[in-house]
Amino acid sequence: MQSRFHYIDNLRSLALLLGVVFHASLAYGPYFHNIWFTSDPTKHVVFDYIAMWSHLFRMPLFFVIAGFCAALLIAKQEGNGFIKNRLKRVLLPFVIFFPVTVLLIFHAMSWGATIADPLPPLFSVFKEVKEPVISTMHLWFLWNLIQFCTILWLLTKWQNAYRYLLAVVVKPVFICIFLPTVITISMFNQMVPFPAPDKLYPQIWSYGLYGTLFLVGAGFYHYHERLAAYVKQFYTVFLIACVSLVAYFYVLPAPLSLTQVIDAANAGGEIIVDNELLTVLIQSIAIISWSALALLAGYKWLNTHITTSRYFSDASYWVYLIHVPVLMYIQLPLINFDLPAFLKLCIAVFGTMLLGLVSYHFLVRNTPIGQLLNAKKSNARLDASSQTDSPEAIEKP
Image (cartoon, rainbow, N blue to C red; front, side, top):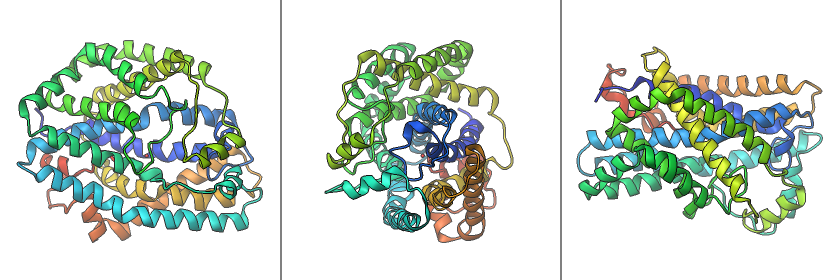
């Protein structure tokens, strides 16, 4: 087993930008106009395609990488060191930043309500909600990740079962048959495109999707030769991904009306759906094929050391934590300007990345916050042993 997996760092760094682009794109596509905080009257359907395409693999890929890094960390740390590390690097940041994020988003919306004209439709939804349900918002990734890490840690208490399960989940028959079956069954009662599992209570469908992919990632660490073998099927996976994407766009249901959004909000965020089995199956195949394609592309072309990759990998945790409120502060006033949607998107993405990276470099990197998020770095911070200091590829949604 190689000492450092550069493609993991590089995929993480590239996915940072994609995560910001995804959330920024939601404001400028008509499909999500009724459900996003910063929906802009200037819209174009191309942003719907960007958001929905990246949504298929962005977070699923992160959980594969998270599982890979979790298995790596378990292999390097003895006893209960793994779960102690995850409680500190994942659960503690969630506990600290969740109330901060709630306050920032509330302030951004209150401030935006006084300056944005017209207001995004979601603002009228909030007025109709009688009993709002607590949401973990974009921090849902941390909350789900700590659950999966805890289960994986408990599983290591039975080493034979642990290694057997990880050997099974990376076999072709599991990935090609059982994985799409599990994901389809898990998500059959969820809306399409699939939502974020942002509730404080465990959501079983999230275990079927993200939890299973987390296990697959852990399996690829222990049986890395499997991933090398799958690279030979790269162009077959590419063809399946392209076909499934076209089919996915074709079977997408109509966007939610404002009335449906209000009803869902009053029902605790649960949307009653009547899905066709074929629609959910196509979505599952698209999720798996695009996630696999991104992972294989990283292994194939990004498995080399890039000097700035580790820096951006570390910075991405911080940028992830703050990027949604920052986007809101930028995009809400942009509603008042008659500019092309593409230009607004560029301003929002560039401004968020700039503020995130500058604040990380000067206010976070060498402070206790930086040590909490990325662990204290030694002088040999690029040494292979520092792979486990990374926070499991957090989009970082």
